[in-house]
Image (cartoon, rainbow, N blue to C red):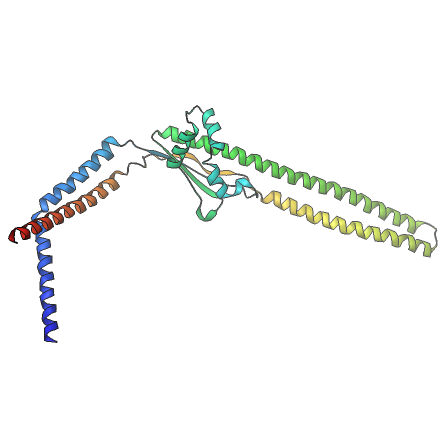
Length: 288
């Protein structure tokens, strides 16, 4: 028991000596650590303030149509906005010189498409060294998307309107037939036929009338559903038109300086520890 306590005390003393020596070593090289850290910060400052070109970001937010189709699916839009199928023709028409490979590299680095929780609201941003180019390119891209989305919207809503027109036409025909049957029933009731004969003829007409009434109710329900769909459908719309932020988004100058400072401290400490380690090792070899 006493032996274990003695061993723990000796190990603890060694740990305290090592920690004390480590702190003293760092303190003795404090100016070197400061110089290395300042050198890293200086390099980061020169790059951020003098070398790196400022990058501006254009943003827009839009809401997709709630009409079921290709252009109402956020996953489809994210892929479509970065496709050459959409972008290459409209960008060439705008006078920008991009081939397919160059365009893909640019979009991969600078075009961002986001939708939270797969909602119909999409945020799109585009970066460029020239703020006006960023805004114009983004406007060209989203306008082309809007045109395609609106075309799909018109096609589907026009189909619904045609369906509703057909239903209304059928309803009109059914109502005419119902009116004809009612007139025929009234004519039979007003005639001088015997009651039995009137009853036989009326029963047949009433059966047909019941069929037409049921069909009329079905068509009215179908018409109501189509009207509700048309009222609830919303087209593609912008929530925020394309705009450019006033200040550049890159380089992040203060962030770069902070990272450089932290990195400089770690590099300086690593140098001090390695220097101390190799110095002690060489001293041990000489004594041996």
